[in-house]
Image 1 (cartoon, rainbow, N blue to C red):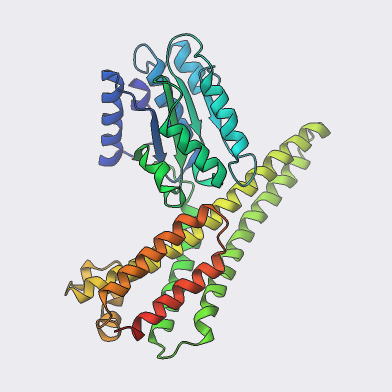
Image 2 (cartoon, rainbow, N blue to C red):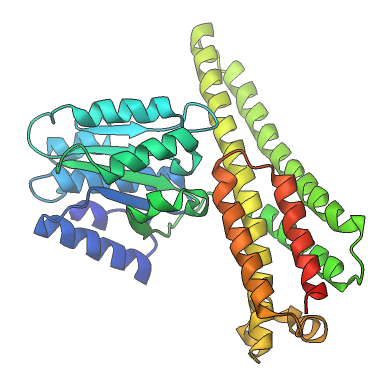
Length: 353
């Protein structure tokens, strides 16, 4: 497993060390699973990780890093390794069909056939159901699927349950800039939740909160568009041949659509996370837990004064509703309607005692 030892972008922490130890043991003992799910905040690093693991699986020395198998696999050109990724904003059934055709063919020489599925959270309903059937009934015992996702919370739970899941932490995290923007969203949402809970009447302002949250998200999305436009201008001024420029621009446009779709899902999923954390804190205060035990310590006094009498049963039902809505993020859910519904349920908790 020399290849894993040389992955300098992995943080030296207990989670990564445990993952490497478990995967190394599987390779040494020859107990390779048919489905893995790698998750982390950097798709590029996840792909490098998946390719390194693939090389370790098929290398006679378990990942020497120097043989032809290792070099061609790391380079993404080994004939037994296929990388699938979305061509637009979603991963369609056509991509999954090509995956199935590839995995149905005989392997080139010794070793296993491996398919790496990038941005698995972008699968549409048809693609998700088709890959689920493939995972439930793989082509043969030599087939290996490695799904990559930055947010498994929006994936079909039955797909996640069919995989061995490994969460990774990277030295270089390309999501840090987005984290600053999401922090603004979190701060605004926290104040909005206080406002709708503190009001004794259900007013239109409750519904306005979802609109305000989506407006903030749109401003954040505009930043992605600006970044794409700058990159497009750089390509146009590159001096390349016209056909090369057009090809690069098409790739850039496709990548932007994927990033935008993912950004929208991550934003709404983050909103769900904050609301869930609030509800968990209400239960904690009802159980007599201290300020330091809460997700949001500053809310202890507010919850104790305003919400301590709320029935736990209602909170648990709302948490279930949030998770159902989160599951539908990969489909054609209307985020505004979903947020309206959840905010109204949060508000109504005070009227169900």
